[in-house]
Image (tube, rainbow, N blue to C red; front, side, top):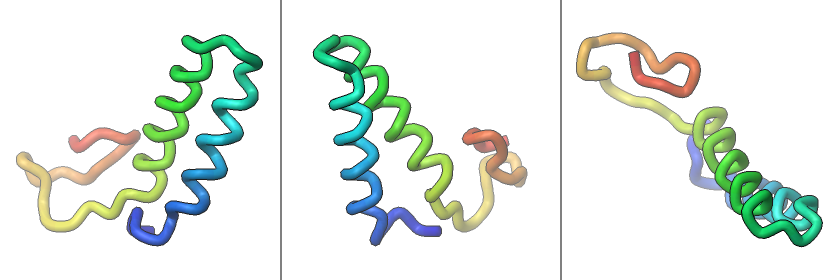
Length: 62
């Protein structure tokens, strides 16, 4: 799934992560960063080829 069109989902996940940290600023930012990484890994659309011709696996270009 391409990232375009997933803004509402991402916004909801970010809000949930930030509010679940219960006032601990560092934990809130770590939770937000994890949501962003997970969202990109799950929804990014890779086109073309990677530098060595391999696929994107486990959130990394191999």
